[in-house]
Image (cartoon, rainbow, N blue to C red):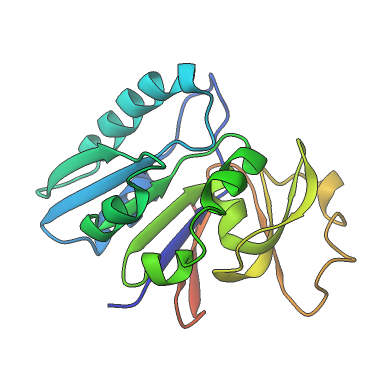
Length: 193
């Protein structure tokens, strides 16, 4: 099985969430009994319980006839947790915080091999070679998806990555939109309807 990456442009807090197509895509190629690893390394600790509850509710709403089990990632057990999971969901939050946490695992690409990796906002940012975030500006990601990305895309940010890694394409990803990539860098665009 190839590694599947699903990059999401992020969500807007407090607005009506339109996430069903994203979560359906995450689960579309998952096995009938799916282990989901929820990664909240980008979040403040006081937000994790609420995000966990919301994410489990969303996954269950879109699971179809799949049987899902969930685990919240911890930095101490992360490599072992990833090995047991089918889906790794990198929740959004602070890109810098997520980068710092994941830098502790130098074999991240190998660890994620053959898995379904979904990232929204900060989660999508760190998977790419370079990204722009309103909080930290331009930064390098892990390059697991060899592109540049601007999540929460707005027209005024379109030139933010022009001077960085010009050989790479830039993905402009508005909120509630996502794109799917595979380990061989083939991709298909999937937008909400």
